[in-house]
Length: 105
Image (cartoon, rainbow, N blue to C red; front, side):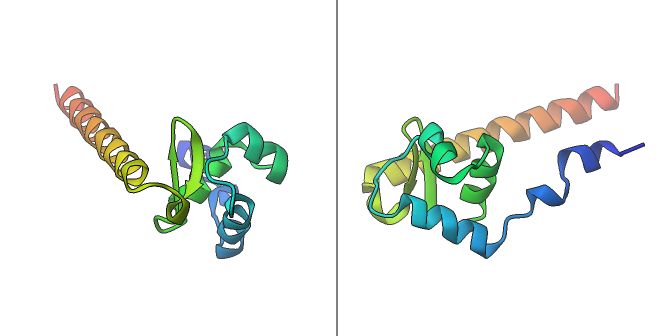
């Protein structure tokens, strides 16, 4: 029986530098591209796109408009992407604390 961890985080989730470079090339000189456009252009799934953006060391940002290279985004767009990630992180920390409290009731 596969562990829950194996189901959620298998070898297919490991993004290589070559994978990230391929996404960067797909985004170059495009500005913002939607996930739909990138799925069509590169054959990536939504999950793979999120993982690649995460593995990009800040080079690829995401938001309501899709994905964009940091060097092609405005300062405001980049700051908004960073603020959204901080908001998500805070929500996840709150949820993890709630789970821990519920576990010890």
